[in-house]
Amino acid sequence: MKTIGLLGGMSWESTALYYRLLNEGINHRLGRLHSAKIVLVSVDFEPIEILQREGDWEQAGILLAEAGKEIEAGGADFLLICTNTMHKVASAVQQAISIPLLHLADATAEKIRSKNIQTVGLLGTKFTMEEDFYKGRLTDKYGLQVIVPEAKERQSVHRIIFEELCHGRIEKDSKEEYLRIIKKLRADGAEAVIAGCTEIGMLVNQSHTDVPIFDTTVIHVEKAIEYALTANIKVFTSLS
Image (cartoon, rainbow, N blue to C red; front, side, top):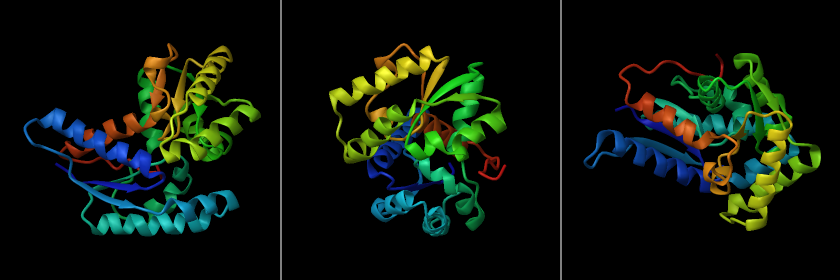
């Protein structure tokens, strides 16, 4: 079994979910008392969130690259950034380490393409929904058509993530708002919707809607388990 590196803390709520799902998945595959081999570095999200708001992605990349080095030094065989938004600096992290970085958007896009889906809605932070580092990768590398909510709805999705989900708060009204937005994305032509923030699965999941939902946390974990239990790890990096 390979050792999985987790760069977490953004937020710790979703990182805890990564840890649980990885261990449950490894135990399901191997049985008995098996659990995942993990090296976890969990950063303080507050200064990183400030850098996000200020648009200082270069400094954010430096901070995460240093954390990536710690993970590699701890013996990890490959690395996961446990957040969609901070894949904006995935290249900076990959350049700082010699182990592969398993890119969340690639794992998600491969899953979507395996279902023969072409057009997807995208929910996430405003950075993920509005900037090109995520949408562009889905489009340019995998040929997917990506639809995002209108501006007012993007603001609502973003607010709920940072003001509620990152604090572990699950509000009924917010769930209804997300489901309304998902329904509208379907009406606008989305065949499925990407839950493109690692906290979104805390609020809505497939049991709440008939619109196919691709939960990026679950998909990322599934791919990591596959890699951890494979003899030879294919380089699957943010630079490819």
